Image 1 (cartoon, rainbow, N blue to C red):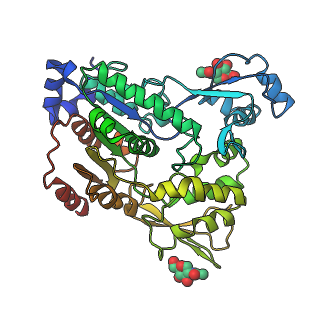
Image 2: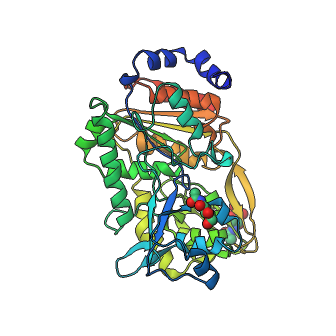
Image 3: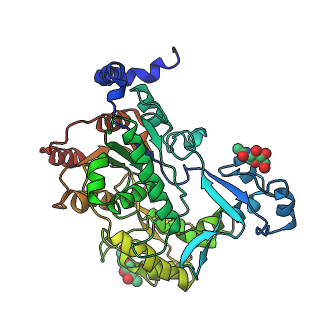
Length: 432
Ligand SMILES: *[C@@H]1O[C@H](CO)[C@@H](O)[C@H](O)[C@H]1NC(C)=O
Ligand SMILES: *[C@@H]1O[C@H](CO)[C@@H](O)[C@H](O)[C@H]1NC(C)=O
């Protein structure tokens, strides 16, 4: 109790009504479902006889594994062992099945997310990932009365298997949508039919938004009280071009995994948001804007079929980033130096670029954050939209820093969705 008090104090001081709301009517809470950032979900794997280990060492490592579900992501003991890391990476990578037109695990590897439905499986126990993986947010929700499995639920996802554009085969995301729909319905049903508050951070926002936009509108209106999207921009971010370029040249086991998965395309800067005349990558011979992404990916070393996959599976979805038509609050940091332009003067994408900084949350550019106001806020179908931009707040701080967390919790607990002038006020706040 004594050790908890300092952590509780800011909440109690600034927002005493939390305490009252929690202690007088815990059952009055609307259920909350959380979607964390990429790699915060954990995966388990099971090997079948069809699995061919990449080396005799890996075969020896895996020999007593078969038939049992074991932690694939994240097992730090294994990943930190240079002899074992390539074996783990071989099971984590995906392959593109040209016949099915879809990504899948390598033959003989079955995977599932750990603890679907709960927040306990999020990778928040690692000190380095506690803030980023909603550890502090879950604690703050528990402090106001939420209980895991009763009023608070986690929707971890296979972060390798990002959604694909409508019409493209994507079994992983289809299954995830079904499970999330069932979870939302369960959360609502077991809480007096109250609609659910869906809260996402960063990459989780893409999964949440695609889930909402592909659910029938009456279902959304019936089951979703409020969508709170933290730290996701409407058009990706520039720094991710560096991530993609480096995973092509990097030969480390995890870089090879990153290279094999479709989620390597998800937060690439989108031509919906970034200007045709704003070079994001600069070389001596050629500049690349968000509109030149296929040329950039090819120049970075991706084979032609993968560039085509970007164009068919990712780009149409990025262009279709749109309002979820349920009450929505976007919370983003702003005013933190953020990579805006990457200079690879000699055109060597394997080297670290020289970075030109602009405004954003340290990761997501302000162009992408501000575009939420037009893409979602100005959609005539979108009845309630609020944007909260917190000056000086970084990407993960939005869900972990004291001040931002208070703000986020008060939005999660919000009961009234009367659209007032607040959207404008917050834009002014952001400009200060
Ligand atoms: C991580 O890997 C080690 C070595 O293979 C294994 O002993 C341990 O049980 C694994 N941890 C989890 C949580 O699966
Ligand atoms: C690339 O963009 C920079 C400005 O960022 C400009 O000075 C340069 O001339 C451009 N280079 C080419 C090859 O278009």
